[in-house]
Amino acid sequence: MLQIKLAKREKYIVIISVSILVLFLIANFLVLPFFKAKDRLKKGIVAKDAEMTEIATLGTVYKEYQKSAEEISRAMARRGKGFTLMAYLDNAAGDTDLKDFIKNVNPSPLKGTGAFKESDVEIKLEGINPSQMVKFLYRIEKPDDLIFIKRISVTDNKKQEGYLDLTIQVMTYE
Image: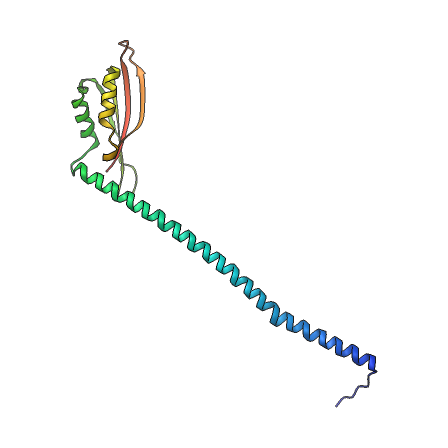
């Protein structure tokens, strides 16, 4: 075996150097990986907790959408199977004695995907007085039946003073 004769001072230097090297190796390969893994696990737990919170929030939103869809389905069922927005507006104009004032009725194609599609009809009335307009507006908008006025335009009638021209875009779901 190799025998190296070292002075007492050199032996202390070698022992201290080897001790420092051993401590460095222990710290580098045992202690630091443990703390890094612990930090990584903590960050993973925080991330998963945030995901769980988001999932719970999305679940609540989904339940609200589901409830709204059920309400829409019930409202559509109350209207009956043969319901069309055109026929509804025609009946409303007849009930308020405004059929003769209808200048134009313009249905739009159904919009949207999924179970419910948006149906729009634009109707133009000319030469009506303000009280007729109010009666007609009151008659056509029925939120409980999912019939809404989407857009309205009121202008003075150019032919008769004190009378109005009314353009309404009415929408519903089918």
